[in-house]
Image 1 (cartoon, rainbow, N blue to C red):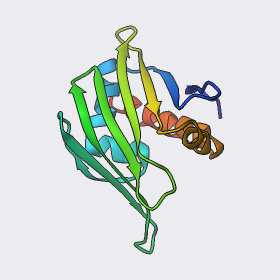
Image 2 (cartoon, rainbow, N blue to C red):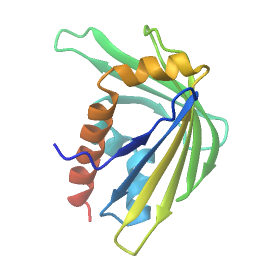
Image 3 (cartoon, rainbow, N blue to C red):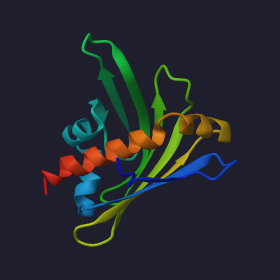
Image 4 (spheres, helix red, strand yellow):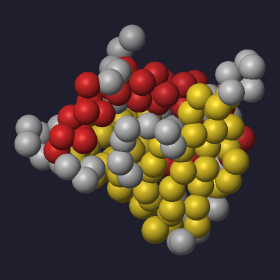
Length: 155
């Protein structure tokens, strides 16, 4: 799998940046983060709540075939500028990870291409490094590849 999503994590820092150029208009890329039906398709999880507004909140959940919850995450949306920016928290339930702060910026490059810039801040450098030891890079590349595939059908 080609890794089109790039992660920059400076040693000793508590943050990282994630960038990805998509062959999608910026409006369509932004929709992938705010429309529950699209989020469910590319993330492979159920959207329980997605309030796209300042002081809104969100909640996602994934269950196995037996109905057991295998992933549950939630957060608060702190800033919401349609087509441009989402600032939110991200916290996983029943996981050894602390809450993180995410700044998502959607940038138009051309009429048909856009870039997602994510700045993610962790409480400590150790927590960030713990996340990076997981197949984090593989997972985000896989998810962004699915996002591109799902949205190609909507173009």
